[in-house]
Amino acid sequence: MAAELKDLAPLLLQRERDSHRDIDVELLTNTLRGGHAANVRRKNAEAAISQHLVLSKREAAFQNHTERYNSALSKTFHYVKLIQSSNVDSDDQQIMYDAIGEKLPIQVHRSMFIPTLENQADDEQQAHWLPLATSYRILGAYAQTELGHGSNVQGLETTAVYDKNSQEFVINSPTLTSRKWWPGGLGKTATHAVAHAQLRIDGQHKGVQAFIVPLRSLKDHTPLPGVEVGDIGPKVGFNSLDNGYAVFHNVRIPRCNMRYAKVLPDGTFIKPPSSKLVYLTMTQIRAYLILKLGLALGAATTITTRFSAVRVQGRKVNTSGSDLALTTENPVLDYQNQQHALLPLVALSYAANFAGRAMVDMHDKVLAMVTSGQPDFAAQSAELHAISSGLKGWLADHVNDGIEHCRRLCGGHGFLQSSNLAHIFAESVGACTYEGTADVLVQQHARYLLKQLGSLRPSHPQDAEAPADFLSRSDFYANPKLRCSASNAAEFGSFKSPR
Image (tube, rainbow, N blue to C red; front, side, top):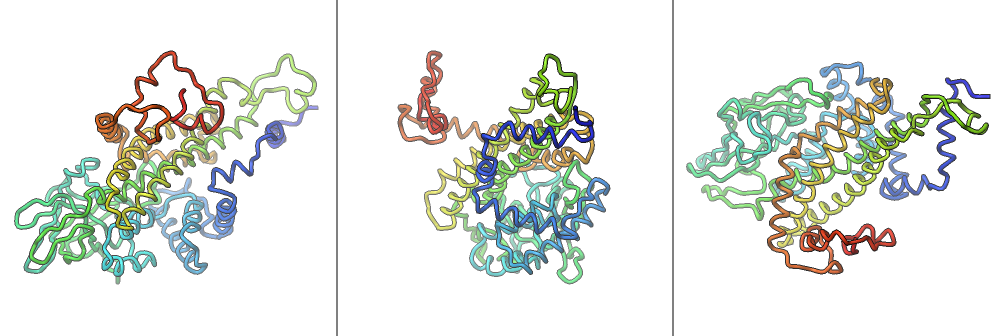
């Protein structure tokens, strides 16, 4: 006798799982999560959040922007209290933060402000600022984007003029469009910002440089003299975050607040070892974002696959008695059109996960070269920038299109906030814009490939492999008679093998 519809879902889901017992779920999960030990730590850290009275709350669907920010601010307090009282290490801190389920007002402080201090401040600056930042006694924003300029960094209008007499920089927002616009945490939370501005010394332009600018009083959190700040309002997503604006009116900061590049007391400008390091923080965000995109699509496809396995539609025909044991209807997942739409997105989520981990590893290696003082990191840095640009631009568009497609594949139920698909999309779709849109990033990616193409010499497919080596074998791969000779997983994953 067929089960009642209300009791059918868990039975169908279990049947689907039983039919794929050849898949080692634990092994696969450990692979996706960085190994068995890392997965155990993840589960323990997530359990600490799920058992917390405040951090486990999920009320976002019923809150407006102001309510979500206030709630997130409360969660920020309890999150910091939890990691400090329990002496949680940095890896578990990140897992706990992700388990909260939404961005907190300290998002940019954690992901951009602290890494910038760690990687691009000198020893004296680190000794002063890092203890304050890591203990959350100051909260930082990363103020690069302006109302009038985003991807075109060289077009930024904020100015920093060096005053020799006082040995200070005078920061100004000379136009309406020069106001900093969009930085997370800037609206209400941040006490300081890494602000990018056009440096001028004795009337000479020295390019875009970065400065640590105090924004609010550490006593009562009011804006400091000359600083105008505020929240830019509700967005499509990230409404727990106070993305804000800042306007500077003759704000003076000491000479030592300049980051990475240097200006001596007499006004002599000392260039940084590499101008590319000014943007290393954004490259870091881009590399880690690729992994996050994979996890977001993985969550969406998991929800959609489970729904498709238990949602029944249409009568079965020409079936045996065993097929009718549970239901006389077809699970949606059995339909080829559902599989055709869903399974490529499942595959993409895996590919993005593995690509993301490779990018994080590549970034960490370049960062290690920089921090250890190795002088020959330029080539690796350029390669990191090019690959992360191409992957981020392509994946952001395809992942978010995929999440929206998952919502549609769930029919009317996907339109409910309780499906969580709308939340996943709203919190992820911003990646199509921030840290570079696809149309901009693909040009940076292509420029690198063209440069490599001009410098590569012809090579054989069995030569040492590098990311751009395939360009020297374009004629080889364009051969219409070429056939794949790979016979194992390693050969399928290598450009060295003839295809």
